[in-house]
Length: 170
Figure (cartoon, rainbow, N blue to C red):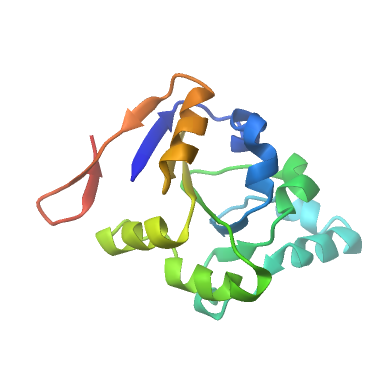
C-alpha cells in the first residue's frame, strides 16, 4: 500500500477535484468525531435532517461508534457543507448496495493494525486521513495512486513495520 502526504487544510473535494466523479461514486466509511457535517446545518430544517439520514446505510458493526457508512452520491449532495476536524477518516470502496454493509463490516473502523491495512487492500480503494493541517492518502491500487500523485507534487509516505509489528510512517 502506498500513501501520499499533502500539507493543506483545504477539503479533499477541492484537492482531488479532477477525480470528483469517481470519489462520489464510492461508498464511504466516515469516522469523524465532530463532523464532517455541522450539526447546525443538519438541524436547520426537517429537509436537511432527511437528507442527512438518506446519505447513510446502517451498519450494525458501527453502532455506538462515531463511524457511519455513506452512500454513493453523498458528496455531490452535501459537499458544500462538509468540514474536517483533526483526525477525520474516510475509506472509499466500490460496492453494490446489497454488499456494502458486509464489505464495510469487513473493512471496519480505522485501527492502523497490519490486519486493518490488509483488509483495506482487499476490500477498499482509498483511505484518507485529515490531521491538523495535512491530508494523507493511501491507495489500495497503483492506478489510483498514480492518478492522485499526478494532481500535484505531494510527498510519498512509506509504511514500515515498527518494533511492535505495526505500520509506521517515515
